[in-house]
Length: 250
Ligand code: URA
Picture 1 (cartoon, rainbow, N blue to C red):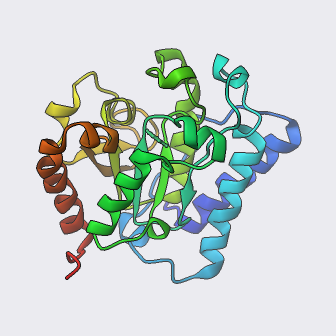
Picture 2: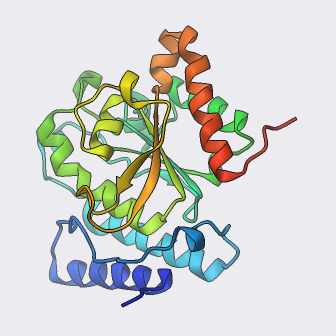
Picture 3: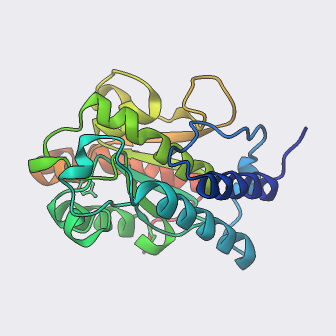
């Protein structure tokens, strides 16, 4: 059966509402969505109803599953969860690693120094932060900004998959190795992965269901420490711009 994007979104909303009514906190790994059409997702948010439907689904996901999540030990060390923010009908989604100190305090993704760098990258692409959606693999800050553990990533990954299933972006930029490895199910390093598009399967399983292109690139925090690598990151972002048909601002 050919599913229309609106039907998929309604099914997701229904599932989340049912889960909420049943008191189920876990987010399903995959909701059957056989024909998410990239061509349709490519349309800008012209229909405010469609947009508000996604906003509602994101809110339901956040309120019923993420805010009170206790699936890993970070629940006891976080100040609050950081769901992510931006357009609910974005053409482009940026996925980072995990909230840091500032993000944990404010409840928003990428609002510290790395966030400023990410803003610069977005503006260089001719976009604003409001045009895109920005989130992380982990929704909670690891203490002292240590690397996320494999268990934490496994526990949190369904939330990211659910976000992407609702948002239906045309392209995802994975910022840094943890995001790229999580989204692409690979152990390869960021240096090997960056510079070309990869298929990101929304189901989380290679070859199953629809996929969208993902561009791995360097994390903004890495670029702050290694400015010589900015050229490569810019090359990656220009490939994303070409895919989206974006002009470099004059
Ligand atoms: N680094 C990340 O990966 N995400 C943030 O939100 C902030 C810093």
